Image 1 (cartoon, one colour):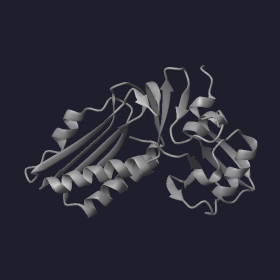
Image 2 (cartoon, rainbow over the protein chains, first blue to last red; image 1 turned 90 degrees about the vertical axis):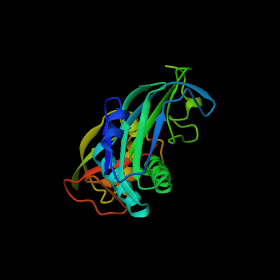
Image 3 (cartoon, chains in turn green, brown; image 1 turned 90 degrees about the horizontal axis):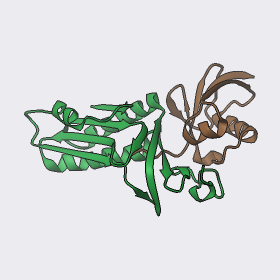
Image 4 (cartoon, chains in turn green, purple; image 1 turned 180 degrees about the vertical axis):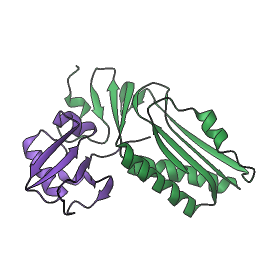
Length: 151
Length: 80
């Protein structure tokens, strides 16, 4: 059970190999990618920032919760930080279990909880030149993309 | 007065203009400290949208701060 913040590209293949377990009949993985469109605006790139010590601690807590709730054999989550281009992998989750039901449910639980709780922030850079910290908008505030003139 | 180390991330780092600072304050809770900082810097997020962490652990906004604590205010998160 490992949750890690990474400053370098995520190596999904080696992460998945490391989950190898002869007891496992199922491996479910999830990849989160940088997409080109969000909330009605074309996106050029993303910047992720984390409070790493607390992010890894909270992430490990989520993996422990997943292990308690579902019949898991292994679970790993790696989240990238830094400037990412379209198509790059921002997050990878992999879980193994004897059966697929637990693996699917646990994978979903881990990514949902990670998005809701782990201190990681995302700044979108738009084609218009504007930027915005996601979820941090306030009325007329600095983080409202519509309120920021192009740089 | 107590002396605290405060670290800023994401939107708060940009609005504060530094990523960390040491400061002396009469505030004895994260909630009071955030209001003090909000009066001084152009923070747009209201206190009820910011969580607090002390010494790398999430805490309640009314936790009592002590000299030397490392305080981080957590803006709404957006991983994934």
